[in-house]
Length: 388
Image 1 (cartoon, rainbow, N blue to C red):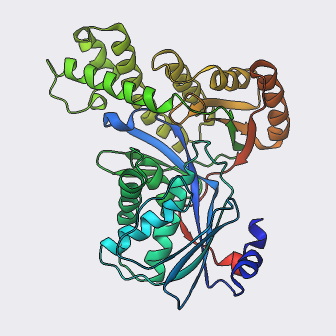
Image 2: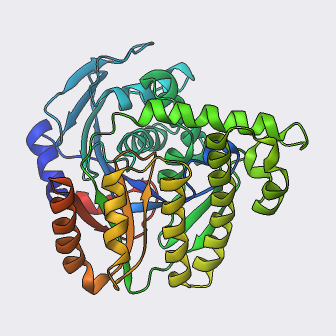
Image 3: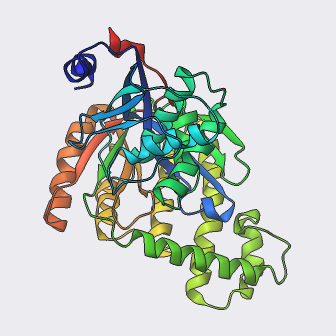
């Protein structure tokens, strides 16, 4: 489909597109459930994402069309926009609303969106749409935002226009992603380091469990509260703002302050996972994928046993991966309770891996997962190639 986007634009709008943009999805390679604890995460951009083709119009109207959804909208340029239902076009409208409210002049546009990110898989399709829209508007209307401004604006749209209380990792990863590099990001300060991550003979397998993630939000809030409880108890003796300000050795020394066994488990995961991110950065920079794979498995085990956010579906993928010699490592990625797992799989063995993990998973769970292959790709940018 992505090879025919320009033809589709002409079919829909009876004219050629003038500009094209692409923003990827993302996975988090390691560092789960520590972004709200002042720790380090390690996301990367993937090679799936959102394509946006645009052409200006003289009508002062924004026309939203998608090749993924039948809902469409024509809406005039105005001073205030509101979310309508759960439609996909709320994401770009929220971005336009912010540009207008920030005093940046915009004009009518015909806009065609197409995404090849599996919807609802936890690979950040919403952040991808927000960032590609904000990048395009900034480029087309010379609004003068920096890339970091666009990340913050897109997160604000997600929080205050859409109403989802996400952190900044998703928007940051899809904007700042670099080919063959993982981003070691401090979600508190937004300091980051691009870590060389040449996968060599491996590809990133993304395994969507296809399980609806109904539990994720309530359990997410519960975990945040448990971490705050642990922090408050450690603060009796330690001058810290976040759990991730201490390492595993310091935690061992002061863990007696945490009175509830469940809260102790949550804190142990957070602090050890933060240490794992630092070790993972060293392993990737040294091109030691075997060591990185071991850290992935350790991360999954911790999320299963200490943080208790995985579930039988994600555990089944990790369990199978450990039996396959062509897999260096695997883990759940994202909030958990469904969504996706990732695995480092030898490229020439990917098809076999895909068939075997599907068979193993289907026998155990009762329905099939979806399996995709990706490399580590670039962040948002202009995509002139689809206009040719």
